[in-house]
Image (cartoon, rainbow, N blue to C red):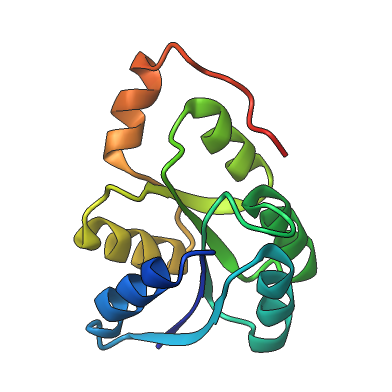
Length: 144
């Protein structure tokens, strides 16, 4: 069973993710968080296998959450699920310890694949990000 913590400041996004992922027999949603500090605390308390995390969170942002969780519990694999898909965000997220980066416009199957791959110790980048990142001239640094 892959234990998953959902972290997004939008309730409806968490509900959709829960609904999508609950249909997978080997996934268990163990908690939800609506801000960055709550995410770090729940990750410490619940020790999920996978943390699905939005970049833009109240309190502390997803990049800082990624850093804190990676230091606190390196066995937790963080997957960034974000609408921001420029190369600078991707690189910074991976540098801080994320194991995958999936855009919010990805399919449910793609997210499920990302979860399974990072659970097996792999790094996952959405195929659409790999194509777009080479063509995106606006390669701005992420705001932390």
